[in-house]
Structure formats: structure tokens, C-alpha cells
Image 1 (cartoon, rainbow, N blue to C red):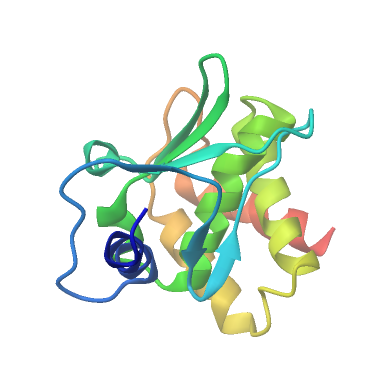
Image 2 (image 1 turned 180 degrees about the vertical axis):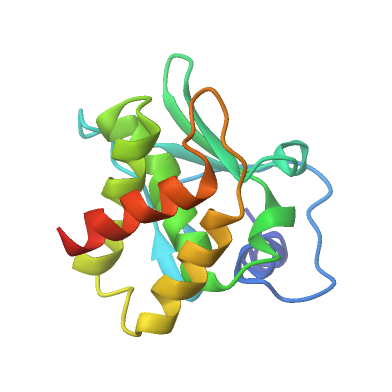
Length: 158
């Protein structure tokens, strides 16, 4: 990947304004989110391929395993949130390659890893993240936002 393409990819993930990704970027072994180089290793020790994919913009991202582990990130979402919120969601998607499809377990994995990596250094970060999550609707796989935020808080403090 040439340096210009890499700059635009990093700018899209880090939230520089007016930068958009018009086509799929990847596979990448890592991405810079909020100034932190992030990668994902599966439970089997395999490095997940990361794609920045505008077609995923209606979602935060998604993890899949069609012969090899992948994470697709929606640049529209990652451009609209603070870096530590993006880090949480990246780790949440990575968690699906570690703990499986359980959304609550993926949330716990993400928040606990943020803490152990030193990515949480101010209580306002947690408050901002939990406020965003508490506004999310539930689904057949996700708890309603307020209950989901409570579970994440319990994981962080448990």
C-alpha cells in the first residue's frame, strides 16, 4: 500500500474531518484508532484481516470467519466518535474471534482489554462510552442500551 493510501486510511479511522473512504481498504494487519495501533489475534492465535469498508457504515463493524478471520469497520461510524469509543468497538469486534458470538461476553472482553491496555485513563471516557451505548436499541442478539451499559460497567468494575 503506498504512503498516500495509508495516510487516507489512518485519517478515516482517526477522525480527521472531510476524509472519506470511497472503496474497501484492506486487508490490513492493524489500524490506528485514536492514536493507538490496534490489531486482533483470534483465540487460535491467528491474526484477523482488517478491512475499512464503507458498505458497513450502517453498522459499527462486523466480525466474520469465512475461511479466515476478518473484521470490517464502517469508516462513517469511526469518523463520528472519539478515539476511545472507536477502540472499544474495535475490541468488541475482535472479541467475536476470541469469545464467539456472545455480545455480552464481547462487551466484557472489550472493556476489560481497554483497562488492561491502559486505554481508559479518565472516568469521563467511561461515562461517554456508556452514554452512547445506553442510547442504542436492543435486538435479538443485543440487550437494550441501558441494560447493555450496566453490564459493561459491571464488567469494568468486576
